[in-house]
Length: 83
Image 1 (tube, rainbow, N blue to C red):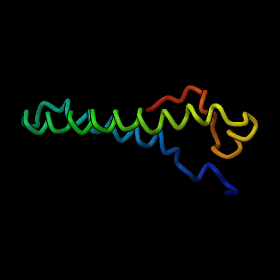
Image 2: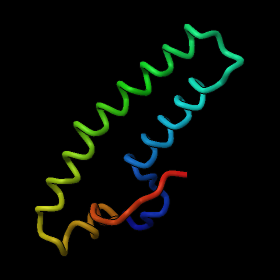
Image 3: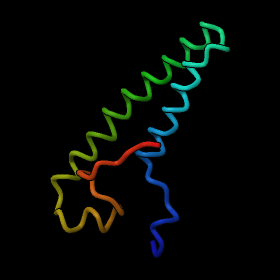
Image 4: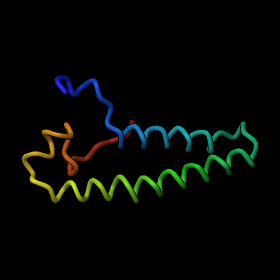
């Protein structure tokens, strides 16, 4: 992995995708049934994100502090913002 900037952070990508799903649910031009389906997808994705990704990041926080940032390219404790 010579150039880590070529890679996309999976967690941020997942949250960005989920934001797009929520935007579709907020679209008043869509039928109510479709909006409810998008809300269901959003909720399911968010639940899975917290169960899997946040749990994994918590475990990574317990690993040798010097090696985490080297392997991931970011620190699990750092506050990442989704655009």
